[in-house]
Amino acid sequence: MTRRVRHPNTQENPVAFPLLDALDLKLLQALELDGRASFSRIAQVLGVSDQTVARRFRRLRETAGLRVTGMTDDSRLGRTSWIVRLGCAHHTAARLAATLAGRPDTHYVDLAAGGTEVVCAITPQSRPDRDEILLERLQRTPHVTTVGAHCILRTYYGNSLR
Image (tube, rainbow, N blue to C red; front, side):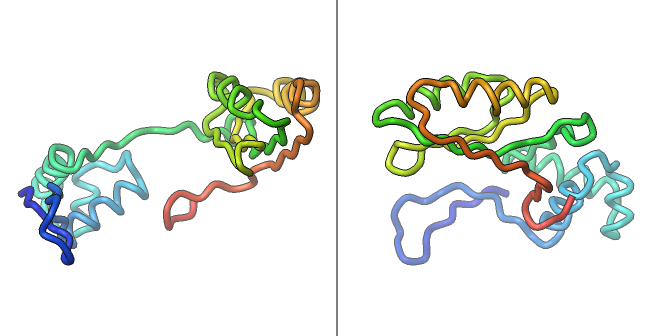
């Protein structure tokens, strides 16, 4: 059920895109709310058969690349996530960003302020690890001029609250 869709203003560069109907969108929403829900439970909520849900799921997986993945809830493990902004001396931010990106507790890194600032999101494995990186290691890093750290109190995914 893949069709080529063209931008309304141009006939160039057709893009393969699976057409999603209302049931597909409801299935996606159900999976977003509970990715572990059974097909029979989703079917019951959506008012269709579990075979229909399974068929739609397979089609979305094959044509749209649908994947249901899991994430750990770090707050249940006693971990907190932090957004950290690091002001850097000229021409040192990229190297620092690459170093931070290689850390297992870093899950986002970007350069900002014209390449003089590194913004990253980290989730240290423990309080001692948090204190060591935020209060000691980053403060002592050569060419880091400012450190700002903000604890993430609640994470929102898409339009739903978790």
